[in-house]
Image 1 (cartoon, rainbow, N blue to C red):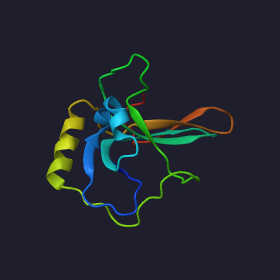
Image 2 (image 1 turned 120 degrees about the vertical axis):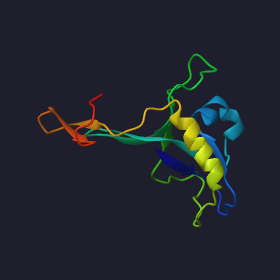
Image 3 (image 1 turned 90 degrees about the vertical axis):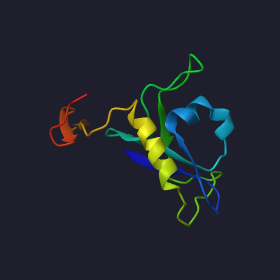
Image 4 (image 1 turned 30 degrees about the vertical axis):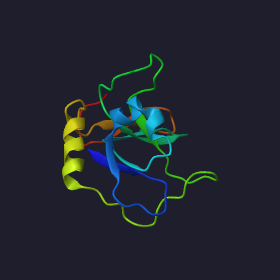
Length: 134
C-alpha cells in the first residue's frame, strides 16, 4: 500500500487526504486541487513504455464510460504543468491511516510477479519473489 502525494502549488500546508475512488467519483471537484491520494501503487512496464498508477479496487462508476480504477502518476514535468513544491507536505496520521484502512477493504494487497519480455519477445517473470502471476 502506498500513499501517493499529488500536489502542484509551491506552499503546501495541511493536505486533504482522499482515496483513489473518491477522486475518480468526484473528478470535477478535484481539478487543480492539492491532495494526498491513497491507493495501491502499480506499474505497467514494457520494452517501449513505463507507466505508474495509484489504484483502488471496486470503485463506483458514476458514468458507464469511466476509466479504470486507476490514477496515472506522471514522473516527469512538462511545460504548462504546475511546479511541485520543494517542501515536505504535512499529513495528519489519523486521517491517513483511516484512508489506508478504507482502501484495504476493497483492494487486494501483496506483491506479484510482473511479466517482462526479453529481446526474443518471450516473457520472463520478475518482481514479487514467487508470488502469483496475473
